[in-house]
Length: 182
Image (cartoon, rainbow, N blue to C red; front, top):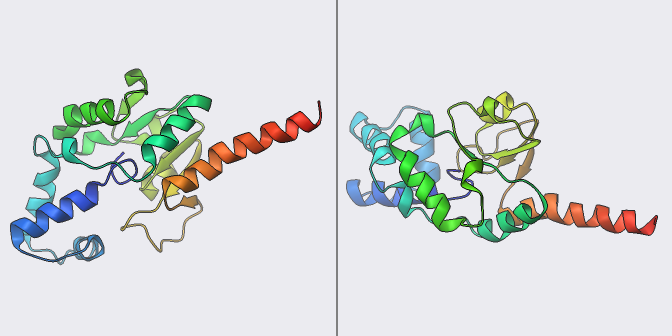
């Protein structure tokens, strides 16, 4: 969900820069955290922000996410899995965020987990390579600031229009091909 359906990092950077009077980009912050170059106070702020009540409710939706998920939902069973166990303070906010922005989805198909290995589906679109490796179906890597440039065995999508092309356009093309043989 984070950094796939919603702009989690963008919101976090905005709050971080305002709090510390910085001008860091998502790439800057990600690089500093990966290299453990972020001072302890700043690291604690970043981790604490995720668990702040209301943090997840304020997240913006990724461009075209609603339209593409709606189109997917018209043709497939769509489940939303989020590794919420890593940030337990976000459960309620994430649930309500999904209801607010994706009211056409069945809330019984929202999966709050830690390890997405428990998700039984054909496809998983995720920004975390570790989650995709643990998933039993076909993983698709959604590009985020922290996975850009990584070489992985997974198909990569950069935006929701790529997801549309992969699933909806392909689906429609297969229907057209089948119709030719009837």
